[in-house]
Amino acid sequence: MSDIKIVSIDIDGTLLNDNHEITKDVKDAIQQAIAQDVKIVITTGRPLPGVQPILDELNIKGADQYVITHNGGLMQTADGSKILFSAPLAFDEWQLINQFMREQATYIQVESQSMAYTTNHLVHPWASFENSLVNLPLRVLDDETALKHVEITKGIANAESAELDRVQALVPDSIMNAVSVIRSTANNLEFINQAASKGNALIALANELGVEMTQTMAIGDQENDLSMIEVAGTSIAMGNAIERIKAAAHFTTADNNHSGVAQALQTYVL
Image 1 (tube, rainbow, N blue to C red):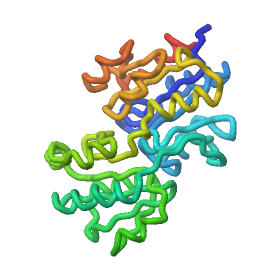
Image 2: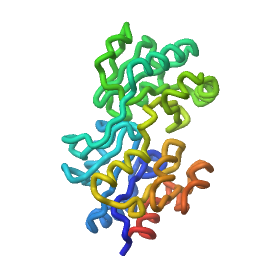
Image 3: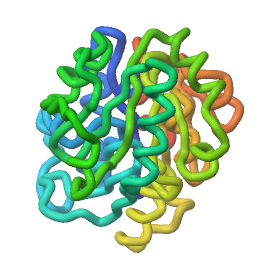
Image 4: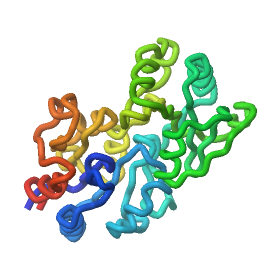
C-alpha cells in the first residue's frame, strides 16, 4: 500500500471532465482512497459554496475532512466550521488593483467567503458565468470603501482570454511586488495574497495533520496548480495540462476526459 496520506486535487480540467462531470472511475477511486484513510482534498480557486455540490457528490463531509478554496486563500474543514489557513488581500492592495483595472477598462470583482463585490456597474458575461458556476451572489457597490471591513480572499478579472492576456502583460510592478497574479482559466485573471497559494495551503494542512510532505500528492492542470505541484511529494500533471505543469510534475496521467485522476490514484495511492 502507498504511504500517501493527503491527495490535493484541482477541479476544473482535473477532477471534472469537459462536461463538468466526475466520471464513475474517478468517483470510485476517490471512495477507495477515502476508505483507506487518505485525505482527499479538493483544491480550487472556487469559494466553498461553489465546491459544496462536489463535496456532497463525493461524500467528503464533516470536521475531519478538508478543502482548499480561493486558490489557497483559505483552507478549512469540509463543513466550514473551522478555518485552518487564511491569507486575505489587504484593502490598500485591492485599491491598487481596482484602479489599474479601471484604467484598463477591464471588469474585476473581489470575493469574500460568501459574496462577490464589484464597483463595475456593467457586469461582464464571463463574470456572470463565473458567479453562477461557483454559487456566489454579486453585490454592485458605488464606492470601494464599503470593502474596508470585508475579508477579501481574492480579486478576479473576468473577460475574453485575449483581453486578459493584454492586461496581464501590463500589470505594473507596484502590483506584481505586492500580490501574486495568476491564471486559473483562460477567462480569469486572479490577484491573491502572496502567502496564498495551493502549495502553501497544502503545506499548512500537512503540518496540521502531522503528515510529511513526502506523504502528499497533488494533481492539476493549470498555472494556479503549480505551487502544489512543486511542493507535493508526488506530483501529477493531467494529460491535458499546460506544458509548464507537465514540466514541473513528477508524472503525467491521462487527461480529464479519460479519468486521469482515477489512473493516478490507482497507480500511486491504492
